[in-house]
Image (cartoon, rainbow, N blue to C red; front, side, top):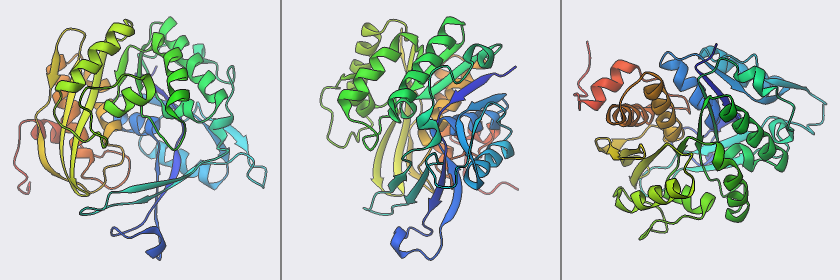
Length: 347
């Protein structure tokens, strides 16, 4: 029995060291990342039982991803394996990261065309069997953006989970490098009747659902939650199956210095976490996935909305302090952060 099932792509990640540009680097640091796998890993880190559903090529890259998931106690038995054909018609996606500093923002370059999961088809996963006994199903807007068939498979998964009584969550995670707003909205609107917990920021709601916050800046770089609240109310009005909406609020002061806060709406009231001012960043990739994981964990553990948004906020803030997509923070560290604990050395 699993507490959580996630579904989506993971990629091999190559990072330039010491804030270098990729063309400067003499070597690259290699690890793994992908929104849905990140959420599964982060939830197992907090003690939940999680499995990840994906489609990988049986070569070094696919096995590398599987091994990293296994290291973090994620059940990988549900992965669909595709034989390596020697020429890469189906492949494992890669992404390359430059970590910004000062006024230079971080930058991601994808190399994920023809990835194995983009070729997934409806009916390829026996979702009724996979979801039997599960408490929660999570995926994101990245997965349906990969291809038309991946969008159909995402709809199949969400609909099956919803009909089986499994709590469903969806992080809109709009990626302009994968699809345009018109296509994102066409697909997302078909998914919305089966989503109960929705996660997304102002850009996500505008690009994926066509709902724009008043006064939104071009950079979507605001910590004031007031305009966001209007968007959330409109989302719930249009999609009454949504029972809870959450988001992260970030002000990027520099590449390595941000203000960070999280917000949760439970269909009655808005709840805000404390503000993590001048949050020093080692790596910002995966911060939103840690928020999703912290929220899922909190709800499954029966925490109230204020406690849930505080825990998810603290957990996601701490995610920024570790290199890589995965969060290594412990529950005790989260509790300390939420209380505004000192950063003095612990010994």
